[in-house]
Image (cartoon, rainbow, N blue to C red; front, side):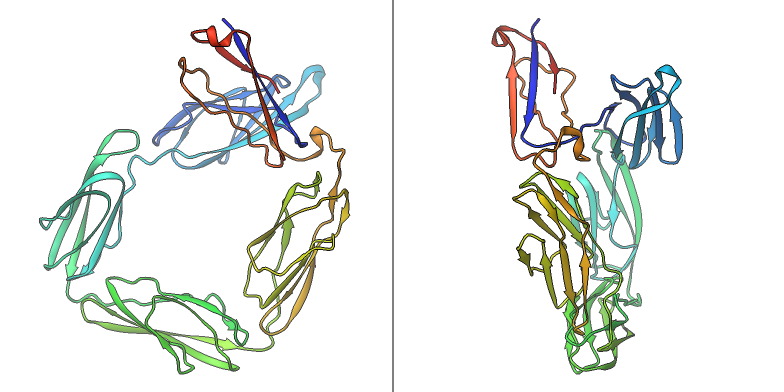
Length: 397
């Protein structure tokens, strides 16, 4: 039996985890009982943190009911000293046995209801209308109580039946509501407004208190003059009933920029490595990002990305101006670019994922999550591999 030696060369510098987490099974429907194994050639003692529980040992059995974060720390205790070798973490997300969503409990006559079933299912709305699909919309034309029945197979190929009772009425009162996001804005500052899609609503009317109106469910609006305005939303549902809600918004020229931050994805990198600058976006009139290498950007976005060509120390900064013309300058952490970084110089997680075994001629994927690599070189080497009917594949970095 031949062995395939797989070598991956990176044209970048990264660090790799010294402990891997293996789960058997690694996926399935909840509740998912899985055996977790910490794999490391350098460690003999392992500490696990799963949800709020602590475990010790190379192997741990745990039952996942929903998405759960798993963390393991590996130690070498030879000689009586406890020395950390590495850490790793994973998010395990078992699939729900079935995930049915019915948009409303009660609706007006001629109101629309939607059923989302995830997978293709048989959906009986209880009024004689039956449809197959993963998402179906339906209008009820008669008053009364109806039971929606959904039948199908979940993602684990298990059959299920789900039922939900709904009421079709002619006296439902709408309950309009909307979220302002801010109690104060600057003149000309756009503010996003949206309804909460109240029960069986069909028509909306906005009154912004400045002489302008809109009939859209979602809108961006700005006020030109200083003052306090009453913003009202009127909602008319398919029962023909109307209700309104009013909230105040103040337009002031004295609003300051507050609670602003910006963080780089890496403070130490090789030349030409892309660095993301994450930023808490707000309503800014203008933005000027100075990367510290004689290049700038004035694009307003959730984050910027930049690559430094030459080694050196860089001091990026960003100047923000709001619609009240108040400005502030944020100084980002110093960015160090070096061309002599070693593998362990960057806090980077590098790994390769391989299947336990494959059938002859069956294709499978090799991939790496080395995020800052500029290029990859794969070397698949095995003497006489093409003459082997099957084999055990090994990996070496």
